[in-house]
Image (tube, rainbow, N blue to C red; front, top):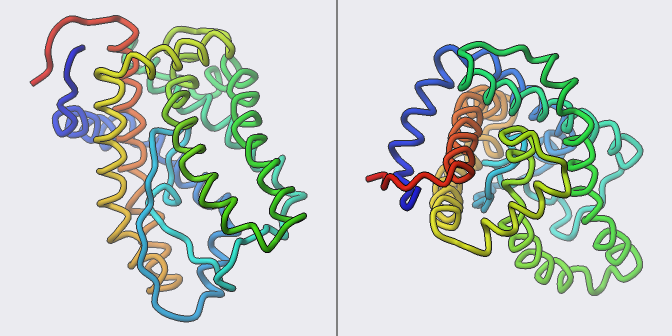
Length: 263
């Protein structure tokens, strides 16, 4: 796979996501609801807000991939719902296992069994979700201990976080596509990222696509509270599923080291 025809891949993935895989759209829907804190922040916001989100492929893509959530006080937001955080992370890991496993299973056999995939990949992807969220802990403690320097830390965290995201976004997909152990999947993802090529091309095209969609989605979700938020939640679910289907396809092709050029 030497080139990535992003439009073609996304169009085919959209057809699949709105066809036989449509029931799996409940995963991004549920994941979006689990971001209830973002809902409360939007409802508490008073004023007009426009923004853009820059995101790379994730284990579970949902409405918050496409919405720039405002911070009501204009500063760095520290969640008052931290006790619920482990529960949300665990649910994301299990949902991701069922989703990615089912997409891959459907590609291979034409059918899928969601709970079977949760059982098969849940442990590894739950650990992956915990690892990803654990990376935010040092930043959180640094923010709490030095609120005055929080903005500077945030500016540093963005490029560092984006670089790590780029290096390891394929890991949960490799766990499923290649039935790999988590450490092995992380290593392979890093190797793909370092090689660049189709991996890099897919990443930057994905990022630009999400940014473009987020411009409109943010305006609707934030400035038309309740109605706009509900519309964004429902409308982005099949798109989120299509992006996940596309990433499964691209990672599968990369793993197979196909030589056919996609144009």
